[in-house]
Amino acid sequence: MATITSTTLSSTSADRASGLKAFWRHFFATAFNPYRPELHYMRGPGPAWRAKYGAEATFRPRTL
Image (cartoon, rainbow, N blue to C red; front, top):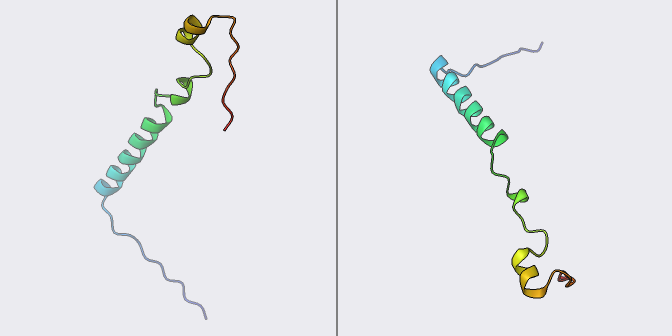
């Protein structure tokens, strides 16, 4: 015959509330972070490059 036993974690409601609060704080901080570095990466020559080399100059990216 099989016997089923279970154990419960003894935590107070204050500990649970603290953990839940920390979870939601971390969730909202990461989910709604206004800093998006991918929006600031340079995608080609900018105005200083064009002023130096001219607007008609062709841009050739380096190959690695």
